[in-house]
Length: 383
Ligand code: 2IP
Ligand code: CA
Image (cartoon, rainbow, N blue to C red; front, side, top):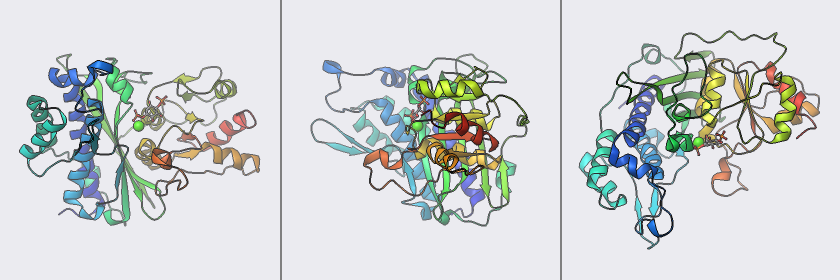
């Protein structure tokens, strides 16, 4: 049985890579790809199972992570959360609970039930889920933290940027820059937070589709991780762009669906060059890499599973993710320099369903906290 946080990080890196393999195999194996892209509606709809295959891919990744983590860290049982429920229901009132079994053959049999008897698809998926994959990372292995896995909880987003994953535009990520859309925007996100305070302490981000492989047909991925607890700050990459704090203008990244009032207000501080990209996690990753100064979102349309992992990585670099509404309130009260960091342990108890876990005040993701005051000054009174 594994014990400390260094072992937990190593395991999360490995399960995130397995998750990336599931994401890649679903696009690369013809029989799975068919299932992924066909959106069954009306008369074509599968009578037996209502939910789409893409939901199954998400659920499978989530359950695989849950299974592998709980097998090594039983103290995390009940503290691993995600977006998806693992119950698949059909119009006939039958339901199948998708879980990863101890043996590959049992997982295959269970998946075949959800896949309406498609043995080939079931065994392709089961093979990837049960592969023994170990990622080694010297920095991760030497990590020493004074907390233990019994002190933390986990948020999983199996595939953030699902629409880009399904649409599948084969854009490669540029050497220095980001993709506004396409497969690179789809990310596997695993975030670890402290049960006591809700602070994000460890984040693993796997990008299954970063660049094409040498054949030009398959994809190579990459991962990024970060840890921040007390005085310990560690991350997986060596170079990060130097922050230019004296700049007159900020490079601002937004969702293409952002409100016109927000776009107008931020145009002034961005020298009229607002930028857009898909995926909440991907946009925070752009901030992590210093490709933009800030990601601003005015709506409560992201959730704890979207932000926990990249938020932890940002904290490892000295940045963070603040609640936009709280930051505006602090600004109105003259509280300059206040940061209202998002936390991950408490639901909005008065809300129902997924809204319990929404980042409902909107977000500001930054590397340098001085951008918060500039953003809230530009937005105050305008939204
Ligand atoms: C989505 C996904 C979307 C994002 C939205 C997230 O998660 O990241 O791309 O919207 O906020 O909740 P946008 O791209 O406009 O920022 P998922 O793909 O997991 O549903
Ligand atoms: Ca998401």
